[in-house]
Length: 347
Length: 292
Image 1 (cartoon, rainbow over the protein chains, first blue to last red):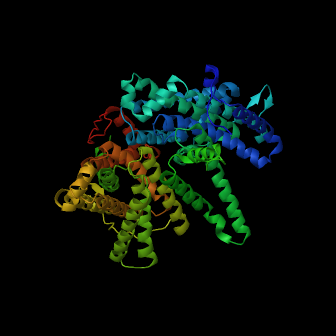
Image 2: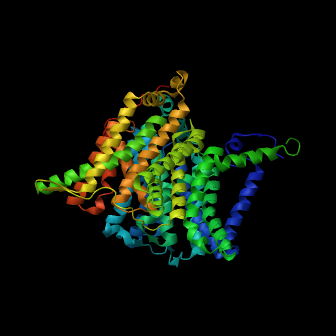
Image 3: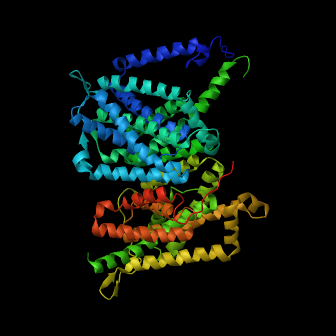
């Protein structure tokens, strides 16, 4: 039973995971993650890889939208930029450990350009500006055929390290998942720094933040650049994972998917990012399983309705969480934990 | 450059901007009345067009009865949306409201696909096809009539806002809900009415668009391009929405004529990005003044 915080030294106070129990569980989690591809079935390894990519991208969006308050409806387009960067870099035979950071940087650079209007407009107007960026980038993906391959898309070769090809879900897992862990820890740490706290101050009231001496110009652009960097890296991984980049993959629905993930999980919370992305990745899979089950029971047309059911469920989840649980799954988790803190002495 | 061709495409573009202005009016109504951008506007259009198809083509009712039923149906939908989605979210941050309307759009889109299927349906051509010939310039009849219809509806709404008691109370509730409430205006009623009006304009625009092209669940994607229109005009200006609708209609038509069809969809967004850099609150929108 944990009854309070007791810090005996500054080092202890600063620690990211401050109790021994937390650190032990973290160790268990990492060991489980390392062992997973050898134990889990191929389907679950595939899901884990997909989840890793979604986690990185959702974390980037949460930094922008959840922590800094800049709504982005163009997150998928920045992933697309990363994905195409990787495709081009591989064509120039740049190895993946340089191509992935490059994907992030190119994406961040474009994010900086799109972020410029954020200095003058906010809220709904800014959301529409990012929507415009989404469509303009999608147009570039479709029409700049010499680089992106147009509508047919571009192929991405497998990532390889010293001649060892990271092809197949089981191998690419060891690229995606460690990277996801590192980037999530990075995001968690960001909000213990001056810059991260400035982001939060800007979200809560940007004018007050400016009065306190935070440069809105630097920090809004920086938030956008960091978020786009995450998206770019996730897009690069997407390229190595699916081995193809086509314009319609990175359309508005994917942007909305990530927004939904961070809303369901909890805005402005890394735990929320993890819970939300996991939840939203699982929903289509669970629905598919349910439909297969219904078909086995003799409902003939169940499969036909899968796409529309998915959309309805997706929309209902967004609206339902917004109305009934606006702080998302992270808040539910916190409530459950608080309940067990003093259980069974106080319920 | 061929001046006659330019003139012809300009006129057609301006006229087809009428429908865009009508959709824009739907956005502006909701934004003025409730400070919400209705990302589900396109789905309202789509559902309206489907309701009209069901009553007119499927149940074979005469067009006026079908239209009346459609408008009643869409008004009901607007009222339900206001009551059960937007009212619980009153006072929430912008992102919640944006996402709620996006989620609503997904629900309507999925439901329409489940009910009516994903295939293209055809609405009969309601508007007469007979073109108008002005000297050497030929104007397609449908475009002309849709423009006239849009103008009539927009004029009607503008008159309502200016001179009727209901319209004035809507404007009062929009500019300051608390004061309006204290003066005895039923703010909830005006907000419900706002959504009903938005649904009605959306349905009419949807029927016009569907009868000129074809009807499918993706009909609503037109509306996203129109969002660009709104930003151009400023979110809270009806005059701005009309002018911006005409500008975008003209730009699209000119782009198709002189640059190519692929660029058509992206032009409004490019213009919007530029406008936002230069005039952040659009051409006619009011600038928010913030106090701490």
